[in-house]
Image 1 (cartoon, protein in one colour):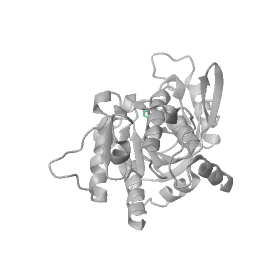
Image 2 (cartoon, helix red, strand yellow):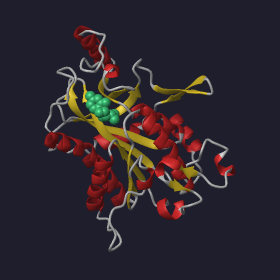
Image 3 (tube, helix red, strand yellow):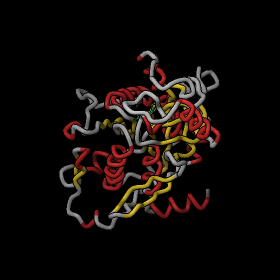
Image 4 (spheres, helix red, strand yellow):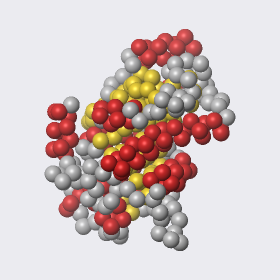
Length: 310
Ligand code: R2B
Ligand code: URA
């Protein structure tokens, strides 16, 4: 843990600002954050984003707009009179981004490539805006293994389909591996914010991150399936034995890229199906909506606590 803190400290500037592990950026006269519809030449990024402390990401634009609305009420943030919440990245037609005081709420789309592209640009945004010690959260949905629907899972570690805890991508024809590390202290702090009277469990464990929702997660209901139900159940049991309690599609890049940038981060997902019982998502929409608010609540508690003790 101390070694880890030391490494992260070396990745940042002394005052906590995010340092880029890329010598090219500061040599460019402007940096265009293409998928955010922002740029260091066209926008005053320090003025716009200098006060950010929390970056919250989740899959869909709608959910992240709702989270922005929700957190606005929770922290009592007031927008300037006559203004409304605005999608800052609207003109990218890729991701949506909302800012509520110290909180950014951004949609990341589905899957590793989508969240990885976004993270490159948001990490650069943190650098250009001179943000200090930001904390990144991913709030999402997942398939649970042996968990009642609506359970909140805080990931201790992200693993790929081969149970390896790093994000691997080909770069210039060679495989590069980045360890997918999540902040242990953040996991403990978040877990402690579960209330005894919350009508669901909040648990921690490993998260399987896949590049596919169907075959990649051992589903029998994709367009293709070349394994049996027995094979599927054996796979799920093997996962469970090694401590995996849920599966989704972004945690690996989220953990690895934030860690590589020296940024503390956490992944909190609601389970929306118990994979030991089935593959299809059959829960009514209203129930799913309530389940998806649970990770948001936990993150909101964390943000409020931080803002109170600051
Ligand atoms: C969870 O839900 C999505 C797939 O339905 C994917 O983005 C994920 O990680
Ligand atoms: N998201 C996933 O990736 N898998 C599930 O089973 C549910 C949500």
